[in-house]
Amino acid sequence: MKAASHPRQAERLEALYSYDILDTPREKDFDDIVKLASELCGTKYSVINLIDADRQWFKAETGFGIDETPLDTSICSHVILDHEFVEIQDTLDDTRTADNPLCSGVSGFRFYAGAQLRTENGLPLGTLCILDEKPKTLTETQKEVLRLLAHQIMKQLELRRTLKFQTVLQQEIVHRISNSLQTISSLINLRKRHGSSETHAALTDIGDRISIVAMLNEELSSFNNLKHIDMQRYLRRVVTLLEGNAPDNVALELNCDEARFTSSQAAAVAMIVNEFVTNSLKYAFPANKHGRIWIFLSMHKDNSDSATCTLTLRDNGIGNAASHAETQASGTGWGKRIIEGTAEQLQAISEWLINNDGYQLTITFQPDR
Image (cartoon, rainbow, N blue to C red; front, side):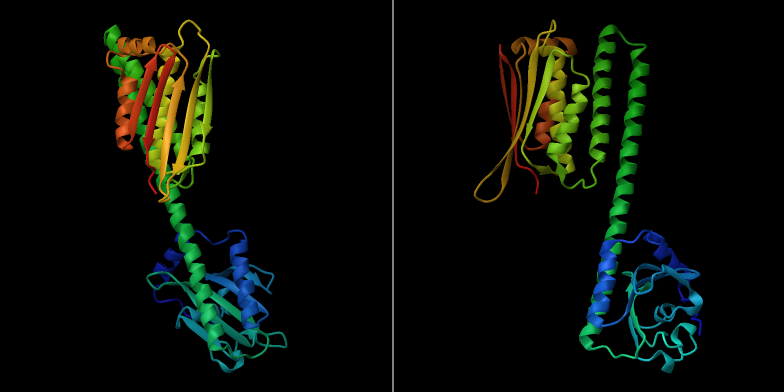
């Protein structure tokens, strides 16, 4: 007997499609679940079965060797109309399955048990089911195992959908930020055409900084987990970007301990590194003076297991003269002001050391957990 459609069929199908799971490749996480279900319940067949509009599709199966069947012979399409768990000890004695061609003959299914795969608002997407060629009765423990495994399947599906949504949202945010920065850059370029030479220089400096912010934003967006940014990897990317603007006479050197920061703290550190390096490249090495810029990020743990981060930036340029040159060029010392403002966001202690042998900045703060 073919099952009727679910009373909330349209809503149920919309929920199923939202997981974007149909027709995806086999995955070990789900394959392991069906193998475990068969072994614990002593059955030949086990399936993670999703009920589509006109078929039942198998995300994972053991014993079948196929990935879908029509709904006409689907036992699971009956189960999603029933209780959360259904056991049919002998399919030939149940009106739902007695005339099902899959249940007749020597190799027909004589036993079936299925636990619904239900969304948080109670919509059944399909089942985790087990089948065998002989009538059977499950123990209460085996029934509970099937329910728990079905629950784990739904947790997997929910987690994957959440991660996908976060990725899409992250990409949309990055796209909007990039568009906003591009709009600002365009307005700056228009304003530069009609300003004085001093205005032109200041706007050029601002435009360059906006371009760098856009690039840092793009680099940060490439990380899948924005809650825990791998700082070794991120700072290597930032330094690579900065090396693209560095002249041949200046080398950049990075030393970074293993650390993971939140995206906001990672972005702040990158901004400070960018401003320091950019200023050094502009003002610390005049007349093709050869030199080096060092970037150190070190982590220190105390007895309470909390950590302190020390970011040390240093160059061997012309020191005091470079500081004066930046102030003269921008009129305000933009780079230093941006660094100090960003350090405040980190609630950091900053210390400048400036002499004739170069520039050094030390920033100390506690990373968020």
